[in-house]
Structure formats: C-alpha cells, structure tokens
Amino acid sequence: MEEKIIEVRSISKSFGRVNALSDVSFVLERGKILCLLGENGSGKSTLIKIIAGVIKPLRGEIFIFGKDAFKQREIYSKIGFLFHEPLFYGELTLYENLYITSRLFGIKNSFKKIEDLSKEFLINHRLNEKTKNLSRGELQKGGFVRAFLNDPEILILDEPLTGIDEKGKDIIIKKLLDFRNQSNSVIFSTHQKKLAEKLADKILLLSKGKRISFKDKKDFLS
Image 1: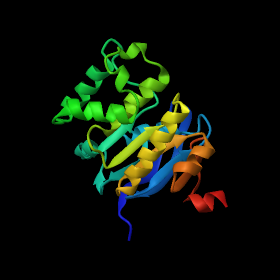
Image 2: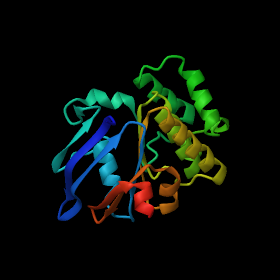
Image 3: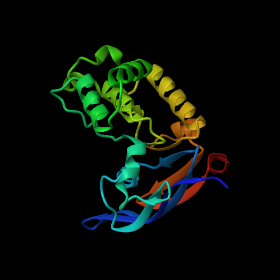
Image 4: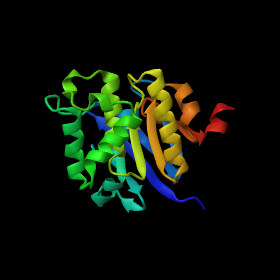
C-alpha cells in the first residue's frame, strides 16, 4: 500500500459571503506529483495556502506525515513552499533574503547551498541584486532556491512557472521530476492543462471552489 503523505478531508473556506472552497478532499501519496487544476477563482490558491498552514479553513482536517497539520506545526520544517506572491524583502539582496531563510532553518554551510541551488536555477548572477530590482521570473527562480534550501520531502507550489523563460521552465520541470523520483512529493497549482500533462501523476480539477474530479493523469486525459 502506498504511503499517504498528505490527506485533506472535507476542507471548506469562505470569505464573507463568497464560498472559496466547498468540502474538498484528496490524498497525496509519497513519490507522486499532484496538480490542482482550474481557472482563476477556482480555489486553487486558497487550498494551497490552507495546506501550507498560512490560513485556516472554516471546516475540515489536514494530515501531513500522518499528523494533524493544525496542531503539530513542526511538520512544516520538512516542506518547501513557493507562493504566488514573491514574499522577498525588496530592500535586501536575493542572497540576504535566502540567507535569512537558511538561518531560520538552521542550515549549515548555507553559502555553498545557496550558491549551488542558485546555479541550478540560473539565478546565481543576480544574488547580489536587491530583490525589488528583479523581474517576476527572476523572483520566481529565487523562490525555487528558497523552497529547496531545507531539503524538503514535500514541495507546495502555487503557479510555479509564472514569468519563467523557456530554458528555466525545462530546468524546473526536470528538477521537480527528479525530486519526485527520489520518493518525494509535490503539490502544484496551475490553470495550464499542458503543464499538468507534463508534470502531474494525479490531477484534482477544481471549479468555483468545488472538486470536479480527482484522477490519475492517464484517466483524466482519456
């Protein structure tokens, strides 16, 4: 039996009178990539933020590594995040932003790790630039460096290829597939069906906050 890494049970969330999510459930197994697919306003980003522990649901439960995510927050030390908003301090350089993250996680030899990951994501030449001066795609590459700094077992990514050039996209897709092949797991959101086809093992289709289907990719595309 495949190991359940994330189990989402009947998650609902409202913002005022707007129902952002209604009774959404799914399971992600170890060594799998799950795509949250849907149009803008379908609830993808809200679900990502709830799973990441950024906002609380109105109802429902989430278990990560078999632990209650709302009560046992230590599980998040094993997760790397990339949100739709860059979340960098604009007046600091990219390196300074990444170094702050490395200190929070207690990462040893952080300079070499930042340098190596920055080379992988083709952003090492911008490490000494203030992040307010970086393009959207450069910020996204820096976000990937940050997401991998703590050697995560799970990646949670919101619209991960926003602003990325074609060469960068190819590198990131290969990196995520390699990550999956090392028995790690990924959840990512997108409105692009082609990206879901390239990356995902399973696809959760959302529309207006509701789960429309949850299938293996081959079944979804058939």
